[in-house]
Length: 167
Image 1 (spheres, rainbow, N blue to C red):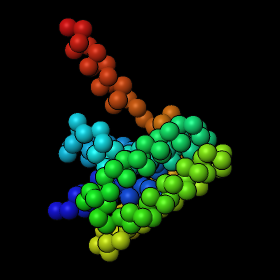
Image 2 (image 1 turned 180 degrees about the horizontal axis):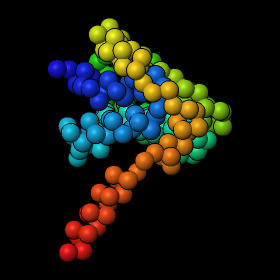
Image 3 (image 1 turned 45 degrees about the vertical axis):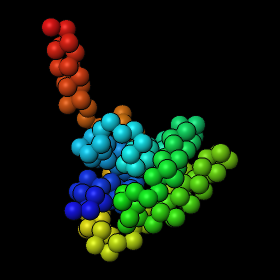
Image 4 (image 1 turned 90 degrees about the vertical axis):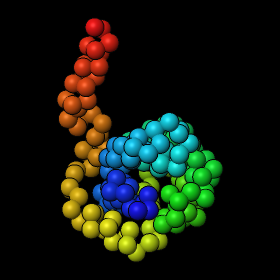
């Protein structure tokens, strides 16, 4: 299976292009990255994670955080331009959108979303099918998801880890 057909990458593209749930993009792709290359901080998936993170920050008007993170994503994409993780994504469009967004951030422009241009019909069909079933979350929820989501599982895992260290 080509790495872009992994269900978590399909989810990433669906959230990015569909309901622009950049927080969820980060979550699903971080899980995929940890599965395949947890120790490689320069893996192309890290660039995609940084891209989603920057879009989340930009939409929240954290321009400094968005610019810093998007610049890292842009650099990652350039360093990994021959990776199979760009085989079915229009690489030139991705790079141009990153560069254009960096300029807009430097000029304090308002948030401007863009889509990942998928150039493989089978992958595009999988992403489009997933987009059709995405939840219709409110703009407020997407804007503040890091504060509004249920974090009980994260907090429980953190407490468990802390308790294990203290024993």
